[in-house]
Length: 528
Image 1: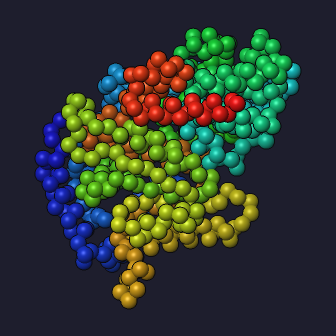
Image 2 (image 1 turned 120 degrees about the vertical axis):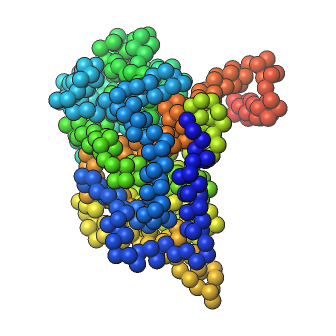
Image 3 (image 1 turned 180 degrees about the vertical axis):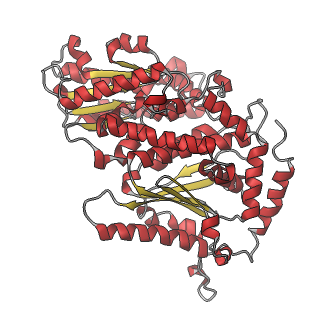
């Protein structure tokens, strides 16, 4: 692929960026034109994307779209939708969009079969026909997974709490810290608890450790080994390993190697979502994602939500040296969304070599972080307004609350969201008291949903997935592998041995040996 930074479009963007970084520049002055909101906002379904408070004009937007075209985004999008081998380092497709195709158009028989099985299992549990070893109906489901097998399902389940069924409660355990499992199991009845072991490979150390704790908990509660199948299902591409663990093959939902972990909530990894809100609502989530898939594939680049969002992030990363982006949902229901997007973006874009194996010539990826508003206003917003580091913000707001109380409070929530984006843009001059002065010209997007429905949420999440893919195409990196994570897993295995065997400590670095020595010293004190 031709050099990114040598292109005339890149150089034109470099020149344009300078005019937005002069002392005289005023972002709010760009609104003197009455049509700026209409010019720099998009609607799709019940989702509004307002990107008018960005450091851009029509020429910048045109250049960003031109850059996307030059980098072959059209061909790359077609390749993903066709199921081509776009995950080159693992020689597989990244075809998660196939999971969201409506049933009437689904051509993948395996996907259709898994969704049918999911519907059947959800129905059996909700109706009470699936029972535990004492014959009692299941009341609690504990999903055991980590990374993509936890973050997506947990985030969506929490976001749609207002739609949860009354007959069961869904819980999530991810951390290998036994405290997480202990606190989750506290108050649960083993006789009425079902565990979902979610691991694509069924070799994930943290997940298997917690699965073993779950099995021991059931056995200690007088569940016979032959009855464990009544309390376990698995989601994995490694069916044989799940069976070896003791889960009946009929209780294993298959996965495929063309579904990456951070893109897997649309698969049977989403079983806890379906158990929380029902299979019908889960299908609405898929439908919302498919709607955004079609928008991404069909909308012109200059009117394409994921493309414009991605190119704005490229604009700030490359021409303003931005290394951090904040995600601030003004919805407590979306509390876990920043964590989910953190994995989606940072695991996908945290790469230092191109697809050709060459060092990347520019910045790639950034730190994604945030918390719900208005909480964030009382912690890190001070830095957003007056700090020396400019952090672009994605505000996310819901027009209609899902709460049955506090209508006036929802108006207060929305007013704070709108006011913060305005304050970041306009700032405040105060030469007499410079400590009160806010510079302004801080960019932000505002995403407005009509309501927090499964369809709207599915559409929003698919949008962010496609945004990440677009950025990977611009940078010519693979968004679908995570070899840095694999390195950490490998070293953790050897370090675990060193914790118990002094002979294995000899080849470790001095820091690791010193830390292990202190750990073992304190372990001995606890035991005496």
